[in-house]
Amino acid sequence: MKASELLTYCLSKEGAQLEHPFGPIPSVIKVNGKIFAEVYSRETDPQVTLKCEPFLAELLREKYTGLVMPGYHVINRNKPYWNTVKLDQDEISDTELLEMVDHSYKEVMKKQKARSKKDLWMGP
Image (cartoon, rainbow, N blue to C red):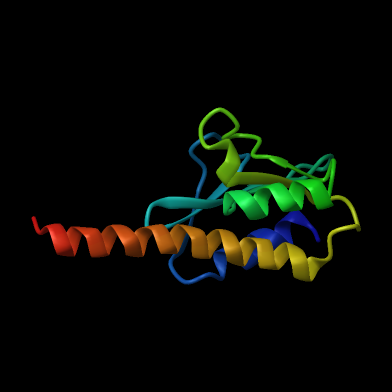
């Protein structure tokens, strides 16, 4: 899948917003102010960094050695929660790649819902 196609898919998610806080690359996609994808649209070595549940992140890294790695840009922060996926290969199907994007989006939304519930319970 091309980086431009993946970016279009990410932006189709409800509430998704595009930002470029680090310059033209990467394209940072947020929902409710939280990053769920960073798309590196380069001619050589295009990649995407996605949020992932730690156990699944490790499974994907083992299954796709060399193609799915600990999160590139976020490696020193929340390494177990982020994967960087190489886009210029055929081993990972487009369907599975889109499922990774969906999972990332859901992980961010899940955290948002948990915070909202906590805020309601705790009050102002």
